[in-house]
Length: 141
Image 1 (cartoon, rainbow, N blue to C red):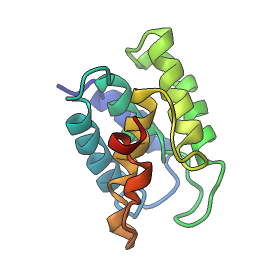
Image 2: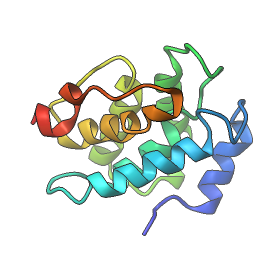
Image 3: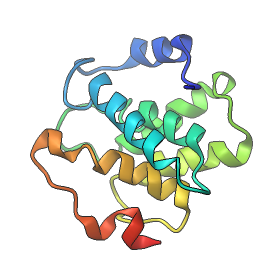
Image 4: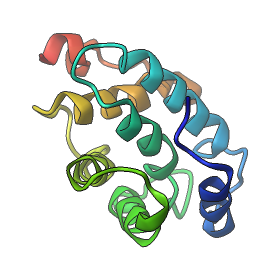
């Protein structure tokens, strides 16, 4: 069951500046969400954080190409919508770290944050990139 409510998704969409169905839009978010659900079946991975990462990590992109600060802006948006996000403080911290670092770090020691990175990377095929298995969870842990 998803913790992403229609109200939260609507709030995110209201401020999304790119094509809703573009390279980094809702179809990508849905695939990241699906990847996250599958990854969260592994022990110790927080499914709620993964689900919310899917909708926040690219929510503040300014373009479909290079935008190195979009992750931190996505974390800021999550903070702005904090009252609509059913995570405790520790989980919320994981969400914001994952958003902030998902394009700048290859790996992370926290299994949930690494799973967020992997859920996103597993959708790189949409832009013609094959994910590097070296950086995926089962190699890193």
